[in-house]
Image (cartoon, rainbow, N blue to C red; front, side, top):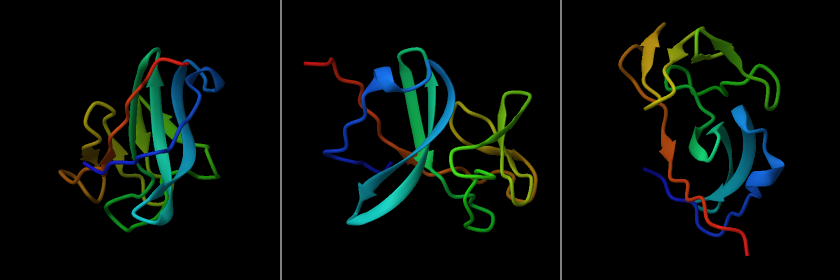
Length: 107
């Protein structure tokens, strides 16, 4: 699992449910992340489809969701949102690259 240190995002600034996109510094480079928030639970993955290496969003921060699954806008691969595993499409069995997220108390 990738680790991002020093990147702070105010949880209050994010919608309480759903997928969002943000960019953070990771290994010295700016990387786009897919961020899933369900209340206080937050998960993140690199915004890269394992099939072709393209971004998952169809426009910056705009994601296709079908039956609770994230769908790659380029080739239609579907990812379940617990572990980020591809369950349908050209990369079945592959997974999104998770990024560690720590939710810390404000202050």
